[in-house]
Image 1 (cartoon, protein in one colour):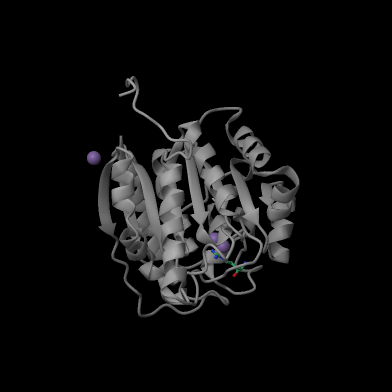
Image 2 (spheres, rainbow, N blue to C red):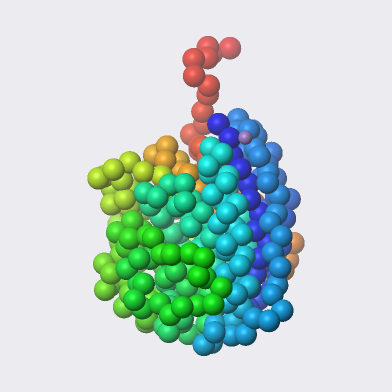
Length: 314
Ligand code: ARG
Ligand code: MN
Ligand code: MN
Ligand code: MN
């Protein structure tokens, strides 16, 4: 089968520049070769071209609303096209505001998709609850039907309508949740596994409950939105909002192995790799090769090894 790579060099969903170089850094770490070795036909669609809108005043304290809205509209169309063409898709960010367009475009083709959000953060602030104003901390609020009456009309987003139900979403890795976000998680009864839950239950049980929650009623396409800051900063230092106490390498890879094993992964986002925030070349290399590892694992690379269907021992 085939994998499409969509680069989204975009950073206006937050205030630190440099995350727009994420797609190039992840490609330079050998992504295409790794996926080809897994026997995929790799279609690299290259990078989308985003333009910064000149007249784009703050909305409340939210910066660049029209620029972020327009970028996500473009990404949504590209994602819809790539999924419609039958590819499993990898979206390389860029900041996490891009999940709005990525999930929206995916949903154009797969309206019954479910969403697994692996992140230190819940990214479920509304413009009214957000402490920072940054749209990369609000992506999920734009997607959720259940928050429609809490969301103001943000300029730049009239092209989309929220479509996701709270019960079709699971978080893994949370450890930096704002008070307004915590109210939303609790009020909507969203299934989440914080780092404390992972400490208590173990990652094996977390994945069992996650997949059961999303798939027990019905098998459906999975959208995996993977923020690299879900990993511990010792493993993924080159990111804009690192938080101590994150996923270990083995926990992160276990998550993606289990998702691969469902056979239902349809789109994966890998976001918030910021090459300019690697303090040393080694710190940057650690982050980008981790991004490649987690993508390869989601697409079927195994730790136990594998062989083609009916080979003989040579
Ligand atoms: N909760 C904070 C905010 O709303 C941080 C969000 C960080 N998000 C991210 N995608 N790294 O600004
Ligand atoms: Mn093709
Ligand atoms: Mn995050
Ligand atoms: Mn995020």
